[in-house]
Image 1 (tube, one colour):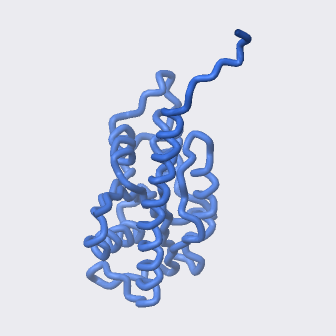
Image 2: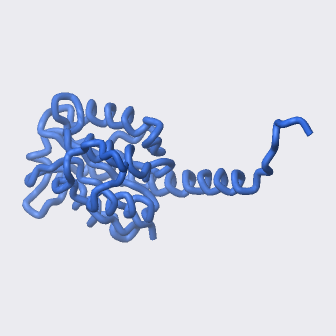
Image 3: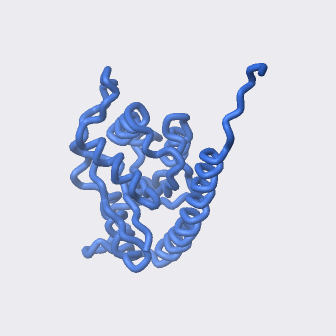
Length: 202
């Protein structure tokens, strides 16, 4: 059983991305324990001189490190991610780099026809930054357009084709997590075993 931390990439109290993560949490409960982390109470990034993360950010970083993988769900605001999500990533980048080498799956729901495709593209670019350097699952865009109409009163997705697509992507992510973590562990093991060479003349 995998343990995943999912990040709700908005500070909105009423978000269809929250519904999406809750659906994922419920629908795949036999495959993974999925915790949903809310970022709405995190302070805006302010580049502290001591590089120390606020309590909420450190809590998120600890959960990321303990998790097998991360799921991020974001809406799309003006062709990009919300400021609250960007601020959260800036905190992680500047203070603890908890996302480095961590397997990440991207999802998103938005009110418009195209869903969150441009926000996800931007998010991929950000997560590839040197201080974040997450391992993002390739070719795995899952997004929901017209998201206000996508869920029933019980919070379930109503489009069976979307459910099947999500199932395929989630199963791929489980395998991606296994492969990625094996590679990362192998790399760390090799680094520990590598002898220390000196280029100084003897």
